[in-house]
Image (cartoon, rainbow, N blue to C red; front, side):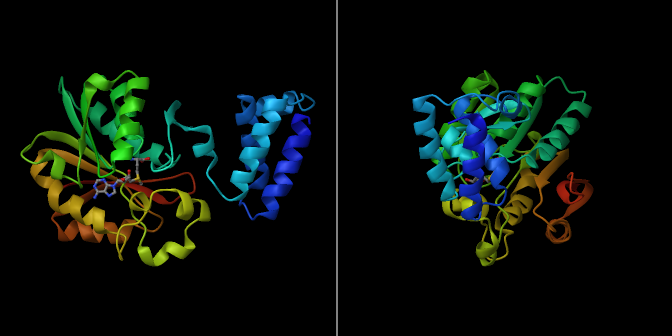
Length: 285
Ligand SMILES: C[S@@+](CC[C@H](N)C(=O)[O-])C[C@H]1O[C@@H](n2cnc3c(N)ncnc32)[C@H](O)[C@@H]1O
């Protein structure tokens, strides 16, 4: 089987199983099996898959046909130019979260302090915490999560990216693991779960079936974790400190309203490439 044939048959198979972007998925799948990037596929369409590659191709294709995430098959996902380990039980980093990371990074870079303290609440794979530590040498990050699986993977990723000495990991809900740290952090960043349980049916099958539900859903309103963040973050932030959060589609108004009720002021918001408000920056009112 050649590269071209593998892509064609995979795209057809995945299309029949209602995958949203079958051709793109087929290319990524074949590229991953060959451990190459997608340009390789166009440069060497006649390259033949070895017997072991062919076997893996069939195994992965069957799983992907059940909407199983390719990232879990590969065991990794790229974020801000770095590879992060992921596995079932741990949320897969999304490209839109790079906007949140960039926003947090820009705020830290504005500071003149020699040492900076940041917290990443709901760290998942550790993609935000680790990228902050790697990109801004002055920062020490506290990374928290309610999921032991996530913290294990984040720890492994910090080891991979050689910044274990600049990140502390703490288990527990929202700001609870930071209790007692009054006026300590320059910045708190979070990509919390923000989908309402009532919207479960409209969520992508692949997310619904295979990603951890505590990483995606947050109560009836979808605002449970935001609510806790707004209630609890003030005591640990410095007076000029900022809270940066990722927003779901159409979340800006409702999240800002919730923030205002809890004494926060919307400082700024950022749009993603599709023009949606995806990231909000708050300061204390
Ligand atoms: C949407 S994922 C984001 C993961 C990672 N920060 C990223 O951007 O890819 C949300 C994460 O928050 C964690 N989480 C959910 N509820 C939480 C809570 N109350 N306190 C702390 N972490 C929570 C989940 O386990 C999950 O890892």
